[in-house]
Amino acid sequence: MKLISIGHCPERIFLKAKERLAVPFTKHHWKNIKSLNKVKSCKLSRGFRLLYSGGGTAVILNHANYIKKIKNYKEVK
Image (cartoon, rainbow, N blue to C red; front, side, top):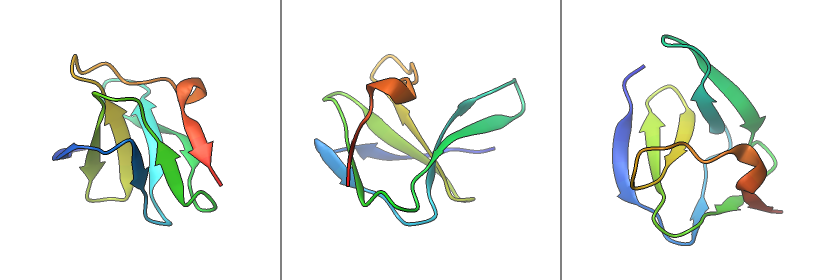
């Protein structure tokens, strides 16, 4: 899966209805953690950026390229 960086995010980023937060599950597979069909926006910590694959999967990385765990996300309904 090729990920495209769309730069640094503001504190809160609005996600498309079909996007999902994901983490690398194995070397060649990605695991969807949370469907964002009902979540209009996701509040992020500073220094994190959104990587987007054309297939509708979103991944949040910080400046050191570590993926932020889902439990640290603050979802806004």
